[in-house]
Length: 281
Ligand code: SAM
Image (tube, rainbow, N blue to C red; front, side, top):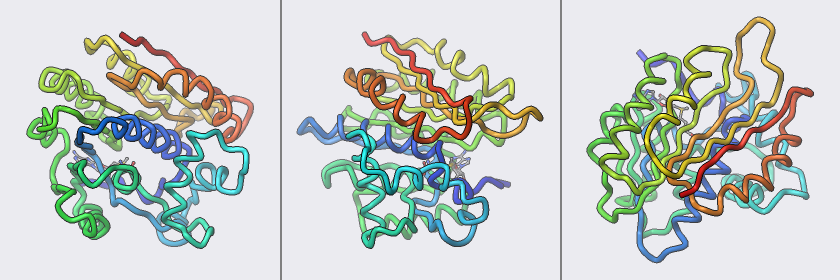
């Protein structure tokens, strides 16, 4: 029984970090003529309405995309991401937020392909509806993304980006992402992989970057954004991170420029900070 619904969190600070990096990764891949595949193991519903329903309940987007919406001093990479969100809000009022598959589709070329997995029956139905206009460019399965990943690697063009973005409500997700990476790099060693993870005061969450670091790969990057001091009761998410395998070589320099700005823009108190570690082969 899946209880997590991404609509509650759509457009929050974690989505901003994840989707701004996602847009950059896809743009890098699109610079070469050869097509590529984008695989999203935990795709969500694809698009979320912010001013009604689940998303309006806690209005987490107010601490995320909404803080960037009216600013006219966006760094170029943030601007490129906000432009993607703007295409879903053509009248200028922020009402819709694109999830990872819709952000991706917006940036990708018609020759590139998407392979999406979403296990929740309601969200996979919404996703199918949202992706319908893209036709055969998109393959969608209402199935376990960890299991499905094995079948799509390596992608036929031997070029690809894999986003692994589980809810982590089930603590086995922490082990599954590490196991998935160990296996996936054996199947498709040259792929770019992006794993989103939460910053929580929970043992498994704190250990995850170190566990991913133990997966052998010469090029990796770990970036995290803390938006507030961890709470005294030990609950709640105070930030998030992205751990990348085989990141594009220009990404570290880009993040060095953008992360200080983004940290200031999304800070909720004086505990806000970012961290960037990488090794490029
Ligand atoms: N990637 C989406 C985005 O950035 O817009 C958000 C995904 S959300 C964090 C995680 C999603 O994974 C939820 O929609 C949940 O229903 C789905 N899910 C949970 N376990 C899954 C599994 N084993 N395989 C595929 N999807 C799963």
